[in-house]
Amino acid sequence: MSEVFSMPAIADPANSPKTILRTSGLSKSYGGMVVTDHVDLAVAEGEVHAIIGPNGAGKTTLISQLSGELRPDDGGIFFDGRDFTRLKAFQRAACGLARTFQITSVFSGFTVLDNVALAVQAHAGHSFHFYKAADSEEELRGPARAALRKVGLHEKAEWLVSALAHGEKRALELAMALSTEPRLLLLDEPMAGMGPEDSKRMVSFLSTLKGNVTIVLVEHDMDAVFALADRITVLVHGRIIATGAADEIRSNPAVRQAYLGEEENA
Image (cartoon, rainbow, N blue to C red):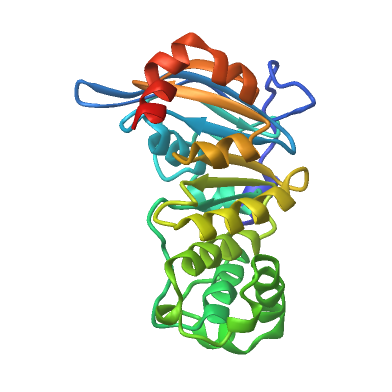
């Protein structure tokens, strides 16, 4: 993966010192359906930046383009002044991006600790086929234990993942992402399927990360969004209709009509 770090930086004239992630005209279509439509997004270093919008607004497609799982049809993605538009997902991960998914993605037949150790190993550039090394090397299991302690799962490190509750599996996936020490964390509905108590615990934990890691948060739980986000971007039909602080978004008539009004009346 040395090719990622030897890659020359490409000038990004619109990139301010405080902006770690920027997209310019980011677009993606499937046939005649436009999913992201010329999205211009700027995320400041250290902030929690929430992306909200109704179902089908293009939020997960946007996250997938940022992480490298999905290539845009048009537009650019800049991370820390580099043009990331054509980089693959593993190359972006090597430069400090990590992602969690809307549907939990963990290995149920492995232990909690093994799951995180494998994430550490993959980030170091080795294949999952080298499982024996991940099971035995302290250089992998040490960071894995530290990540589990952060999310409160250290006492269940030797449990099989299949024995965990849903909220604990979400926390495990977050530990796997944090074990790579990312600069930018992309969270796709981390509270999905959680009950009120698990959601409160997740919000409490994510609040401890504020200022230490930049977070792009896609989430339907508006209480969580308003509790965590420094800024909020509203996406409707693939287009950004507003970006601002929580109070600005709450009081924006276009946002209330397109999204928040529906949420409040649900």
